[in-house]
Image (cartoon, rainbow, N blue to C red; front, side, top):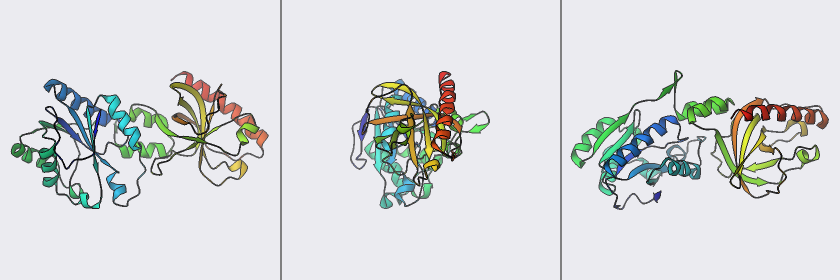
Length: 306
């Protein structure tokens, strides 16, 4: 996949087919658009081009939004999907003022699309005031066609990034995975903790997440898969404040089953499969140890079916 970060210069693309959006989470609805994009590009023997923004427009405008994907995670999903070109437009206050007509002209002049594939509710330009009508109108002037992909609904639920965020904030990682098309994951560096887990026989990898906008799901204990060194391991992950030891900082701690490697400062990815229970405060470490044994048994049962 070729990465393009300069939208203000012409690029030589082969019969490009474009889609546009923020694509946070790259959920099933997004993936339906990507499949259509790639299918249309292949039919033309052309390039499949995703146009997105970095940083997320709402963050660039000073709003708080928790993201389902970091930039690197999103890039990886696009590449795995088979997209040939990714255009990341640097988004800032000045760019937010571009009119819908100005935005279309920018794409048409420098990318020269043959077809633009668009989601059912996509808005673009200043205050997202542009839509399908402008694309059809400008398409005639610039020589591109437009195809709209219908809304995707599963089990009576509309698939959207907002719905996925809500599910994760409720701790429902199973339903979130159903809409995402895969487990929600968190990638970070393993840092040293206070060693309490090791002391009671449940050593943990303490995850530091660099991106402050990455959404961290509801506190609790989760059955999880851990990816490290090209291998997948089973484990359980606690997200919370560790009330039993009176800690006051949110942590992400993962006990990797049947694992004894030193992975301090290494990068791992944790996939959250099922929330086992809420975080609780226990009377002492012995009670906590007993609970962790039960949590581990439950986690192994859940993971065997995934």
